[in-house]
Length: 358
Image 1 (cartoon, rainbow, N blue to C red):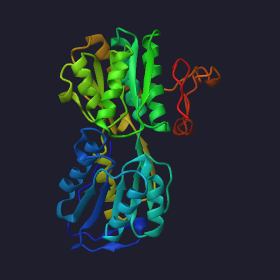
Image 2: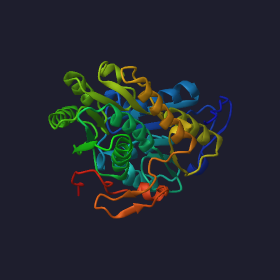
Image 3: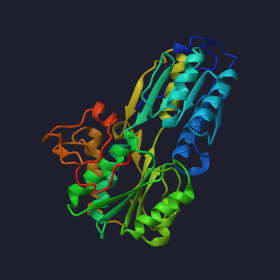
Image 4: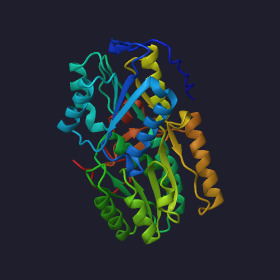
């Protein structure tokens, strides 16, 4: 667990790799860019909780702003440029599709520090950070495999990028381990936030026999549909229990707030570096919300045991033998996937009977 240091308002704030300095009477200007609305109660909502903790922690020593619902692509580059031109010292860009725009803008503003979430491209003034969501998906996959009665689990996916593919494979492997008869149905919606489309996907999965719904999208739409149809569902990015009082089993919670406070502090201390951070259950960057008592106590206990084993390193969600979907060998008996393997994952594992999107 990180130890978050308190700042002294009278300190001189050095901007590390960004190159400039800010005097004690000039607050550090910190900006956040979100791909969806902060009220989505999912991905962007959870990032914005981190922004609020930055404000609470540093008070008048920071000046914090954010722009929400910024599409990936040219619009994001425009917003980043405007932030840099308006004097921001540190800018957090929080969606995978912001990667190239972040690198482009950072090259034009070498005295501004950038942090990009879920990407892999870094520069002297660009760091990257991500969470091991696949660890949380192994936990909920374990639960899903136990509680499904139809043996059909539905999964709403966004884009076929490694982050999303890892989650599907991890959840499937964990479910299959406890229920050999389990089947996954996957619908790709090609959007991060579009509640009507997400709701339609959930309904389609239920029509295909799914009695458990998982999601890697940003809204609560799937949870609401699950509640309406009386099937189980898992929340994504933040605790969605209030939207499915009868359907919600647990949520994977992205806990970005400590990282944001730590990185703002590093800029202030002049110790910031263009690091690559990828953390999970062991540091609570990924958390599992309270598991409902509506599932059997032994399932709840075994899920907690899986969570603890992943956190202490005694269990890796991707441990062989595991084959690719086409039956070719990927991981041998006892072999675990390397971070490099996972960061580039672009195929389904054996047993998922769905066409992989091209």
